[in-house]
Image (cartoon, rainbow, N blue to C red; front, side, top):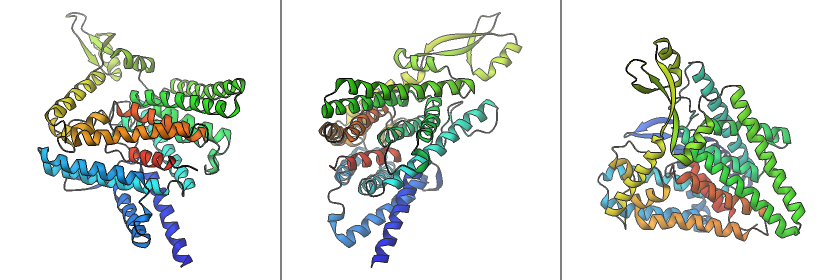
Length: 446
């Protein structure tokens, strides 16, 4: 019996580790009925089978306290109801299968994240290292005109479908290692100051060169909130303003130093072709610099890639730079308007999962999480998501005196998650469901 328990625990540990490690590898292994089957999907089936076995052995008590189960069931119910309005019900049903598998992941992560802390941090750190090194090598390969597998010129995506998802993954993953910086569950290579600093540097460099501006905003906001909450928690415990200020400035200086070194290394080694300051500016002014080739005779000009400058100079064109409206920023507004149009037609129960893909002829990535849920599965799904995030805020505040680190993680996690999902919704991103499942696990008291 003991041997059976021991083997069961080993299996769960290995499965949990592999699931965490698989999160940034959104590569399709094969396709069934036109639907790509990814590593995490197959592992989710194993995770679901493990949960069913637990229910068989212990009854519903094995999962009845898991909040992600009830959130997931509610979302599935609202998604099923929304099928009534779906113009392509077969597609919405396929999306529902994916959603179901992601909810299984979330339940699995919530149940085992505290039991398998070492496996979690090992799997997460290895996934981040592999992804970030791959991203840096991608950009270097692009610079030397070598095969690079990038889906957007000079913006690395590593093993995810697009750079924005890599930015999403790194922005939220980095938060774990601010939270667990001195935790006993950290892998050996992250337990000393040099190891953790190199690790953070590599991942910050990768995050910056994705040019995923929503991720930049999210990371800046969440780290600011994290440091502030840690300082407030310390003050509430110790009532020393001087020591609190010292902690706040020490942590802020460490982070700013890492960012400064990251930016310096990017510039020295030419790891990006983008004007990073211009990209930051574009967030607020909705315009960015483009390179133009101007015909000296006709005075006509057109946009070119940076790599084409030499070619057009040799042909006698003048090369200029100009500020133009940032089509990416503007397109997000257009996508939000499209979602609002669907919401006006089906305000109560939504238009069916994947409706935004359907109405844009499958050319549209999920944009704003809240609008996407409302458009897809109605007002009920919208309130479920808002309610879950509000719950994290409430629990984060309740931990402020007891455990400032946990409070900082929950509050900063919500801020980062919201910033990211206002611009790039993560309804079908496996890492998002891991993150939600983990945060739900953290809402339990010590």
